[in-house]
Image (cartoon, rainbow, N blue to C red; front, side, top):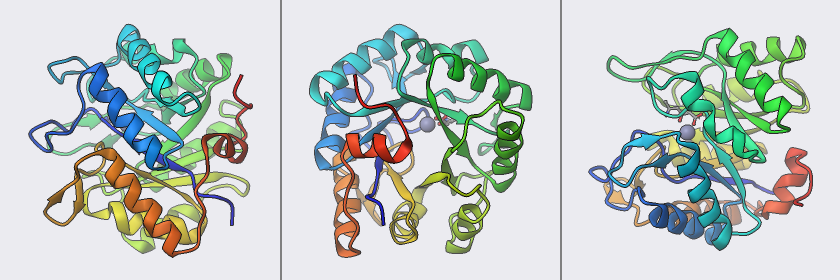
Length: 275
Ligand code: KMH
Ligand code: ZN
């Protein structure tokens, strides 16, 4: 089996210091959390950024500052900015970080409820627009899907030439409004993507580690971090994103799967070697 790519989603847009005091807001906190995760074995940092007061932002300058601080500590890591941002942001607002030409960025492939009254909007035309802009900048999208229909949308858009293949999917499982995080759900999702695609799984809340184990044994890849879950185990808050990554590394070792370095992750994902 190929080596395991671990993505750390260190910050997110929804989780706050009220949920876990270690959730990073400042540039320094974000860089430190990224470093902890990288040292523990993460090869990709899925990045959202905040203002110092915790407000989520897609501001280009703030992304630039955070990316610079992360690269200073983790020179070879793959940084994957979010283009999802937070619910309610405009398209232009969400797209700002791609102008920094990161190696990857997320491409959310459908609209879904996002808990309470929130709706995470990604219409077909929006997805085409985001995909075309990423293509023009040479950015590999991570196809974020919260439900099976979003896989079908990505497949349709790939057939029409809007999304390049092979695609790399992120199955986000357990959002209140998307697919749940049971074993059967992941088997269904992984069995629904085109041959030759790669995939990672992000289990939300209590689904994080069960989905990680499934990802490890099924030959997929794994995402963990405060964006998805703030607990190391039931009722035990994680001290850092690094602790969550360390747990995945332990599970992978027990199950006989080696961990990919960032350059090995580039090879698996078909990204050009680092300049
Ligand atoms: N914060 C969510 C509304 C992504 O990063 O592309 C969207 C999200 C997906 O987190
Ligand atoms: Zn995200």
